[in-house]
Amino acid sequence: MYHKYPPHSVLTISYVGYVTQEIPVDGRSVIDVTLKESREMLDEVVVVGYGTVKKRDLTGAVASVKSGDLTMTPVASATEALEGRVAGLDITRESGQAGSGTKILLRGNRSLTAGQDPLFVIDGIPGSIDNLNPNDIQSIDILKDASSTAIYGSAGANGVIMITTKQAEEGKVQVDLDTYFGWNGFAKYPKALSGDAWLDYLKEGYYATTGNQASDLTQLFNGYGYNADVIRPYVEQGKWIDWVDETLQTGTQQNYSVSIRGGNERFKGNFSLGYNRTEGIYRDDKSDLYTSRFGMDLKINKWLTAGMQGGLTFRDVDNRSTRLNRTFSYVPVGDVYDAEGNINIYPVDGLQDQVSLLADEREGVYKKNSKTFAFTANPYLDVTILPEMLTFRTILGTSVSSSRTGEFKSNDTFMMLTGSETAIRKASLDPTLSYNYTWENILNFRKSWNNTHNLGLTLITSWAYNQKEKHTAYNEGFLYDKFLWYSLSSGTNPSVSSSYTQTKRMSYAARVNYDYLGRYLFTASVRQDGVSQLYNHWDTFPAAALAWRISDEPFMESTRNWLNNLKLRVGYGVSGNPNVDAYVSRTEVTSNGLDNINFGSGPITSSVLSQAVGNVEMG
Image (tube, rainbow, N blue to C red; front, side, top):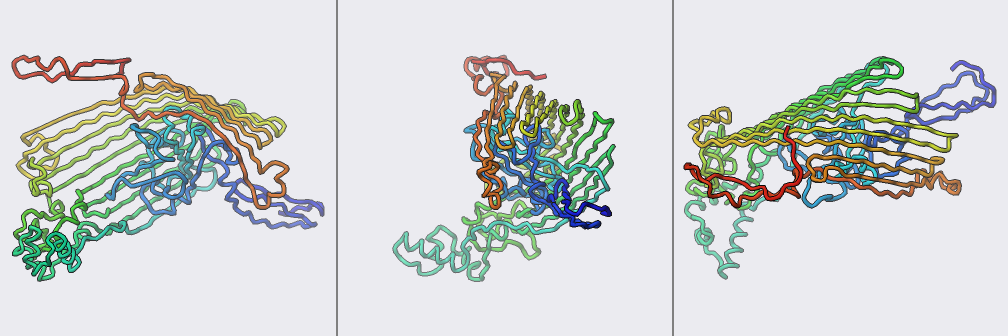
């Protein structure tokens, strides 16, 4: 800076996201300044329902996780990256299989019978976090208490997770590339007894049962009902099997992500591509995930801006059946593979009741594959009615997803060979198609008086439509293994079923925020939801919260060198859970009364609607 300043001037330099610095001029004409990043300022603004608020002005329980924290952990799912980072948020994998989902529980169970999953809101529209690449996420804000979630009414009971994706910023074009490779291990699993430890275990059990020591291996094995002549040769040759090691493996995980974003004052855009491949801890268990995210903002004039955010996801998953529960009950001896490296169906020759736990891994024996495609597009308009005072946003959230799961079992699967299943060569196909639409209108008013009173008012309307079509086709008795599920008509015992689900919601909400001197904070909201799957369609969800920033009081002046934020808050709110079947509490269907109707081809299966209240739209 080449300027002449008065000798006793103090130069104050501030910029969003950096520490404010006050530098004495001391008569200098050239002053060099290095901006220092301020983590506190970067974390200052958090996303809440239908808006944002400074963290210092929060009246509810909200936790935040930023992009850097999410990408530190090499995982395919953003939910896994949240593990251990938010108090009260419990995350568990549904299974150890590749591509398996996660269960999320926020602050414990919220319902005895309904679903426990929180509501995910992505860039203002409800969506699925499973369709996001962690590298595309800018921040995640978790609304925990009822005073925060009540603004989402009938959907907020299990908590609300607000996700903000990375979007374009004005300035130079930025290109990001992220890649990693890692090993996918497994938790410590108890090993089954083997070798001398297994023999000692049998001897102790024999003595405890008979009161005598076994004189030799023949007596020992016969005492347990084993055929000693069959098992003893394998023991004497030391052919021990660790079925845990044979069943599990150390998988791999690789991830590639590239994004580009930038723009100017008039137009900004962003685009990203991602690929993740995960090989699970079971053999022949893998997942391929392809993601894409895109968006743009166009400033049409000084009061109107249009834009859109969207994404594409394709997931291809191969899963196999698992038999870990059998690893402790099997005799730990035998030949897992033959001389040519093929899996032996019976590891112990002559022991027909012990089928290899790897039986399903043989070529053409078992196959299960799932493919899922999801598309989202959320166009919006922002209107500035009064600059820095009154704004309006309308946003339409649209999503379409399609999935199918195919499963084939030959005559030589583990379940068939052990007699647990009897149907021969069976296959099934389960396609699903879902449509979801959400239209929201948000009017925001902000006003300050004399740096003392700050008032915010938000008015909201929200409409949602969800539709799901599901079909299942099954058959058995195929002539060839190669058919898989691609020729279901070739079987001898076909079965089909289908289902259709539709829900609608209409909502109206209002919220007021007020603070006095930045120390005394008040928030109140009310939302009215009309939800189609409930008999009492309409319900009201109020909320209110008070907060007092004690640390800003004059009498706390002496503590400010070590205490920067002390807040006392209290809140109340009501929220609901829509994860229930339509009219489940008011409709009863029985089969009494019409069982004897017969038109010559056998009795008719029928049902009687003994109680019904309201109606369900099917179109």
